[in-house]
Image (cartoon, rainbow, N blue to C red; front, side):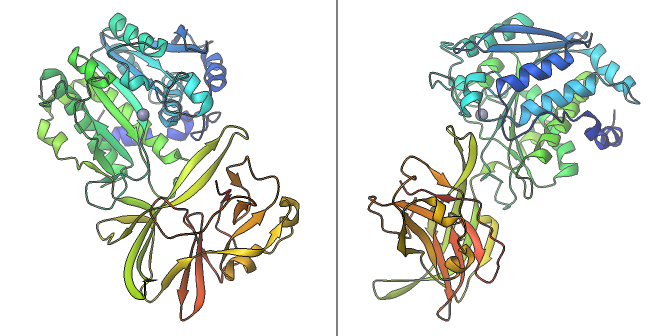
Length: 469
Ligand SMILES: [Zn+2]
């Protein structure tokens, strides 16, 4: 199908989207339950390939009858679930009966697919990158000590696919080159050696990536990047390419106003269908390696919040500084809740960077947020508290006697200091991001846990505070 026809199909994406699955967190029961929904559909052969260290089943689903074989796996890093949802959306697409039956059957005639959604269920359970014994499966392709790596390698040997799709999430701070645009999707044709030789197998990966890039650029121009192509002898993509399986890494990144990554999920669907189409048509063969190399490289040039041109008074002198702040999304295992941790990542001249949120603060000075002078025994006193008044006076911390010692965060728009913790706020790299922005002696806005809050605004923009550790 040509670009215009594919775009018509992508307009119907919502019909194929698996509404049971969330891109924020995916656990093993989600996979099992969803496979159960597909078990009645004749086109799918669902098979348990083995078990993780904690004995969770690792499943594959095989479908299609073509001579070209594709192996696609996701979530080998447990906390990277975006593409897993897209694989289930694809299963919906392949088992739907609609106006695209002709195209669907063309793909199924040409290709035999094997998907492994969630290669690392133990990591997914803890929402962590590595597996249960803290081995990064994508650094275990040589030794193959973990059952998860053994399963993936065994499938590659058994199926002997021509193409392998290695599906991941990357952090939100990559840009497509120096453009300042976030890398919504990054792509890589892994090399086979330290010289980054382009052999026949790698060239095929590059050609397919070039097609994917062109299609994604229809939707997110300037937001597609090329992942760093240094050779990693221990990684799967590199080793599979060495074994003549053209590997394609797709990293789900970030695009503004898509906190839940639903847009990125759809882009995975777009990327994969475009790839399957060009592989089935063999049209990728007309693409050139240069098309791949023309995709801008991933650069780490983005902060969640960039404060520009602040005046800092220190040692009797005034300095003009920019402050770059990131809000790391953390997972609390005890409560099973996500929370944010805002820290200062860099200060000084940050003119080469962009912020997902930026403020030009010429004429403003910066100071540390203050510790409130009244202390509290526990959290109950805070439930009726007027936080916007406290924030407008520049308080970023309160002292608590009880209840907070073992927690990492706190569902109030302020930070808690446990009574016996010695702590003094500072404006420094890797310190908590709690700041006052002052103009003509008046606190105009505050930064609490990396969130920007205008003092005149009564609606609070701070999603959570931290317990200072
Ligand atoms: Zn990953």
